[in-house]
Image (cartoon, rainbow, N blue to C red; front, top):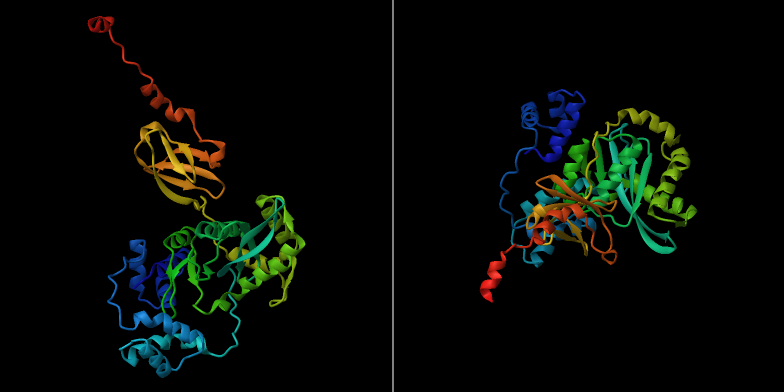
Length: 391
């Protein structure tokens, strides 16, 4: 069955003018399957999952044994039987067989990609000083497979939203998008990836891939060295940038120095494997990159809130005003990585604020509650005769 990743590859190749029959040959499918996918505009809806097998509960144990170098099916079968497995050896051998390619020796042939083909992405961590305090810094490194030009961005988190933001900033720094992006099996991008099976990507990562036109790829389990070009850059940054610069005034200052260092040092180095200045080699890769979309992808956190009776929503320990017509309704809240807060009702922007600590007080816009206060302050008018009757 055609996966979402296959459809993204079809869409990308078709955009470059590749014929349907050549796309089909590349993916190992029939040309009519390519035509149907392009007419449909998406991958087919997933079919009902097949019933699990007796081996399913034991697959994590099998993967662990394979990672430890145990490839003898008889030995693995005995291990599983000791834990209660009552299935046969045929299904076990069928599960092990596709993974035997991982066993081929300890040496790895270096895999070189053509210009514009691949970007490798990874995270690193380091402790440094920001505004006079020791801070753990997370930095995402994105490296072009052909030219080895890379970009990195620092933040206080490596969750999904920061991963997507880091990728976008790298695309913008490099001036374009590669055909595919290779990631590790982190939850921000990959929900599940078992050996011998296709990875299950995070739906929002697939959405990001479709928006920018790249195909998501994931390293095989226990084969992180597939992404070795990028992992070496993590060490390079720690041993060079964070040794030269040991303190920063702010996060903004840190990332400004990072891009300055990239342009003045990292781009001008002679890369050890290709024996060429990175910036000069990138000149041959830049024309092969896909153009950036006209509108930037929204990397903000998406949450939902109910507007209270007083016209406020609670967000991260503080309260923010929303126009009074939306009292009692559920609204969508987008929290930007830049500290912005946007409120949407039925996909229409109805309020904007800046996030601030509760100690600074509630955040209000007077016009939001003008109608609410007018209705509250209305005083009922009664004739004097009503009071005389009481007396």
